[in-house]
Image (cartoon, rainbow, N blue to C red; front, side):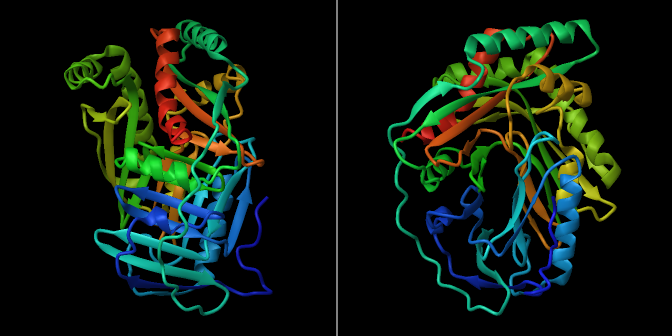
Length: 417
């Protein structure tokens, strides 16, 4: 259920953004609790505290969140001395994959620190005028210890059987692709200080977007949508191969990935899904005919950057809603694939593979897909890790299991450092 954007007892939010000197590593500024993060290559946004928030669910969760944000933004009193995407009033958000799931949230922090293209700033948000706080590194994070890992409700053999069933359904029906996910459950000796895996992920995967919102964290390589002053960008990833660590061999593997009919077919479905969803919002679009190979430390992906020019004033959140779920995380045709996921997957995805990111009062923002991710459970010691694979007609269950294991490596290693 949504809640009023403005509490009549306290009035509108008061927001001030002011430039500051370089604060250093953004993640080092985070306190142990109630912290938010969206960083990429050293730039990005971090925040802490909660000035206000919205929790919503159901098929209308995106529309409710967009309306709440419009109302909140229209009433806010903002003094923005920086005037760049991410300054002024900002909310961090994370949305569930499925309509029926609980847990979608938009949070406005009390303090946000940002850095972009050499410019750094601090934003203070509250119900009254507040001085700009000094920013400096907090206490170092407590490293995770004693992590043990077990399969979730579906073990490896059972998951391979689900993949085989999906292949049969694809071959028998009009379904082209379905994305199946699995989870791994980690148990730690003591509650997780999420700053530790965030720092590890940001260091190991600087080309990804490292995030944390409300216990959901990870480092995603896939930008669902970025909106910046009327320019729309979406990075599509579909088609994956595991790296070996041998540069010569990996170069050959990259070439085989770029020529793989199975992976190219899967990638084409995902690109078409994104382009079709963005087209109604754009005056012009650029959809490259050929993907490139994105090299990450653990895997390589076929990747395409779709770009467009906005025509109707939609916000980044509205665009994210139009794109979710894309073929990259659902399948093709997407409605049929999502129904099959609900039927056979036997996994509560929560916010895995849902949009995660931020939005500012202009409507600009960045929303990634919540991949290479994990959810900290209420006890703080239990962490669910997620990974998924695109299944098509010639998928081999053992190969898909190996691919999912490779995709689990980033968060798994971040919990065992």
